[in-house]
Length: 208
Image (cartoon, rainbow, N blue to C red; front, top):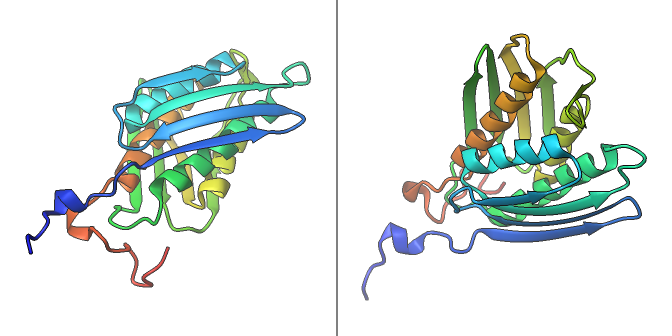
């Protein structure tokens, strides 16, 4: 019998599609973990659109998001629900986690800001957010919602997620942009397949 090479055993079709419709929001998301960072982001929160585009480019995840919500109330429900759906999509696309690196850490500079994101696709939720912002809003996004967005991702992807501004700098736009870029790079590392681990769960427990 011909023995297959590790590349032939690589997980296929690490993609997902999630829909979430409530009385407050309607979110549709399609994701391909093994993409090239191509994206189409359409929400009613312009600054979040820009940040999600940066996330896709830095993670190399192909990402298609369309979201509407009760913006006449405020943007909270829309932003949080996009985080929920993004977390669910990451979890579904990763699948059984066999062969993945599991851990990812990225430190990204954005001009005077230095942001760290470290995560573990452990199957357990934990969230630490050591960041402060000086402005109430950047564009049409309330800065307090950056916390809610990433907490929703961590909860629904069942990951440990630590976000910290090592050098806070002075500019909130730079702070948030550095966080999104670092998160993208950390996800790319954690979700990447190590050919030496094909078919193996990256845990001494044998399960994640």
